[in-house]
Length: 306
Image 1 (cartoon, helix red, strand yellow):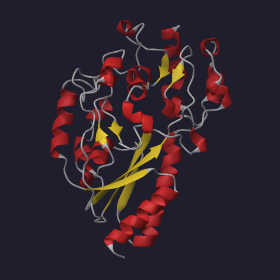
Image 2 (image 1 turned 135 degrees about the horizontal axis):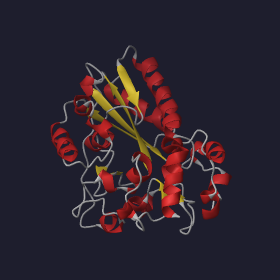
Image 3 (image 1 turned 30 degrees about the vertical axis):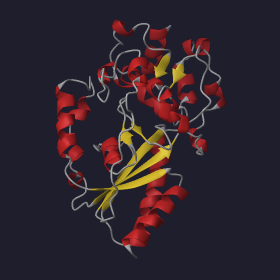
């Protein structure tokens, strides 16, 4: 099978499985990204996420994860849900309102990898959904799936930014794609809208220790008092920098039933959130990414806003 034909068939299969984009980059050491990551870590922008300091070599060199790797395949999976809670209610980030995306997207990625094994033959590779030291946004940028915007998220010019990223690193030498231009221009809506000033004045650098997503998910201690009145009713994650991004006018509703919030979750009001107990938490978030913060963490977030 010709390289062009193989690439086309793989793209077709990815779309059949529900992926909304797929691009290919050459597997190689990431010089510029390694420098930027080192600077970001040295500046303490990762807060208490000390795990980001681990496996530095693997983060910037795909051959450390898959010896002999030749290609990094980046994929995106839409999760845009237009129906969100009213502004006067407590809010959960859109990506976490349905079933845990790790499980949903990982299964589809596994099926895609099996297709590759069946149609290509003996290949060496691994696949990931936010589950390994992989700089997924940088690989997606390198292969033209989008550009990394001032809010530090990957933005696709036709689909916006409400999507999960996944990767296949393999020893198949696909025809590689090229990066696309940055189209943020002079826009600074995400910078101005961030209530905790987590995005640098010029954009493109996120102080993770100030991000509401970090404060409500990754931070294990009490939320610092300096953030009182700045959380904008977010109790798990935050979508503000995506909500204000002009490119998300191109977002379309996802087609994955697993990502739809339950009726119970969609109807929760402030009083119900305040009365939430551990038993109700386990039932409400069974199979959800919100389990990451545990009942204690979510309750802390709710109490902080009360």
